[in-house]
Length: 198
Image 1: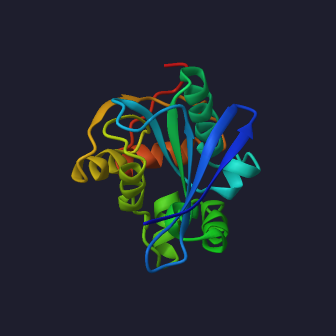
Image 2: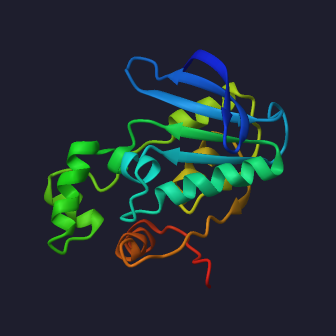
Image 3: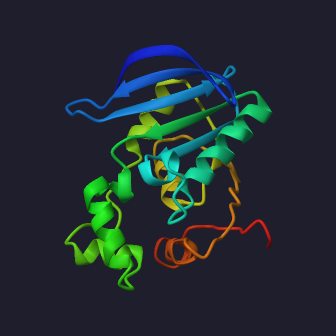
């Protein structure tokens, strides 16, 4: 993992320092948005966010990605300190944008997200989080309060010696358009989930 560029990034949430990283031996690039002093600090509020063009940019209700991204940045801004890692190459659980749209078409025929990926001959989840752990190490983050519902993220950080001191729930609304998607994440991937109304 190589740090290739850094710059100040003013946003509607506040001002972050942005760090662009490139994965060794590949073309994948990831972005870290850092607010406040996180180096050698305990229990840094952290989000590992998988790229999702449809949710993050267009506000798609097929998933909860865009709302989780927004909520994470709001939590970091409210605390005045934290890290958001925007993990590129994770589109559609790592299958890419075109395949994700193909999977959407199968979902419209009644398949869930896992079944659709498998029907296309693709993995149910091709994402890896080792890169995220490497970035946190470069940023000198020693322990985190992780904003996530995904147990795989917790396991990866623990395997890399980055303790997760607390899970910060991201309670976003369950909508008719994303209910099956969220339930599939719970049932087939063991995701934690709390509806804001529960």
